[in-house]
Length: 133
Image (cartoon, rainbow, N blue to C red; front, side, top):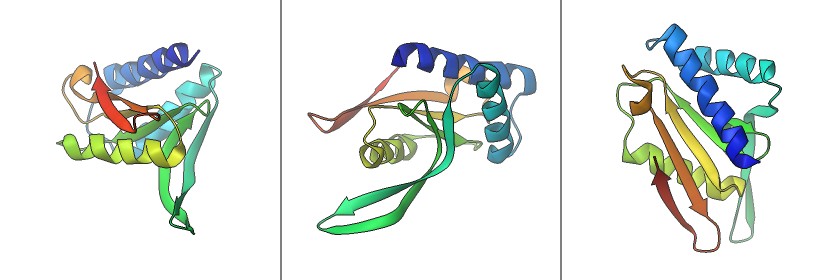
């Protein structure tokens, strides 16, 4: 089930990049992606606040996720010249906080869409992350 959702998500992002291209603000891509997910009947939460438990304290607004799709996939949207190792680590941290295993960094500000998407897996039992192509 999660792979079908991931495939639809990536397809929607690809469609947006192909038809619109790079150069818009991140929030514009977020708005369009949400509309595309709606058309596909895919549920999501937008700008979801995530809390963090740490040594007996709760930080209510540790992070705000751009999108959480079908309560299974975290999506961090970007529209920047550079998306590198920091964004991988950032999404890995967000996956831990959200208690999710699959996340994507989607940077729409690239010439080729394949250069702007990163799939990140967080394995809860080993507490490690990896990037997949």
